Image 1 (cartoon, rainbow, N blue to C red):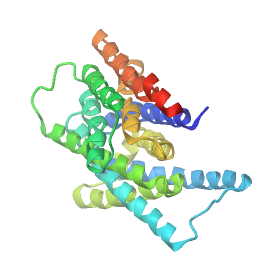
Image 2 (image 1 turned 180 degrees about the vertical axis):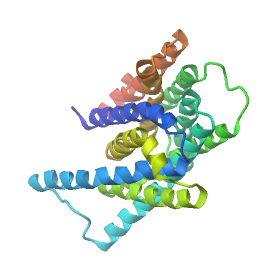
Image 3 (image 1 turned 30 degrees about the vertical axis):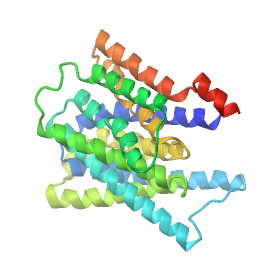
Length: 306
């Protein structure tokens, strides 16, 4: 299995975890958004600490570098990466949770959140990244699939929650581009740990400033917090950081946007919701976009062999 295939499978697993987490996030919409985010983020930190030591043990056995960076410049880069990626993730996750709290329509939330599939390559143009015609076509097909999958009755009126979710998509785009910048420079697991430590601190501060967190709320929403903290945050975002290293960010966003497909499938399995022909077509278009983004076209492959 080559590196690209391995990274693609890791990103698809990440999308699966995030897609199923929409059900848990909707279940946790009864408590404050910052309080929910703080609970899941501190839990992610607790999960990632032993994960970091486990990765270090494997690297030590393999004779690879392990542990915290020894050079001051490398430590500064890692701390800067954690602060930047963590702050973008905090803002994006808070906007998403508030949007779901105001309007618990997971389908609409999934569609608007996944608009980073468009925004990342557009913002990438400003950073000097030029995607191929194949990737842009994949992006258009993915957006069409997302619309068919999530927006069964059109947009209707634009609601305040929609603006929050659109802002969430912009902020997730910044987070993806930040990870793309920092992931080749630092240890992925440590970046994930620091990222969630930043999210945990910032969301806890926001919870005490703007909400009234209570033990009763945490207890009542324990299972959504555990699922989102352990799997969506601890596992999912670590997979994103590890797999995004040396990957094209446009391909990354197309793969991650499969979370909407998995969200609908999870709803059908867990909540016994029936999928319509329109949703099946949307899923088919999403998978077509993923395949098109991954396979080398004959002309492109021929040029690569020269």
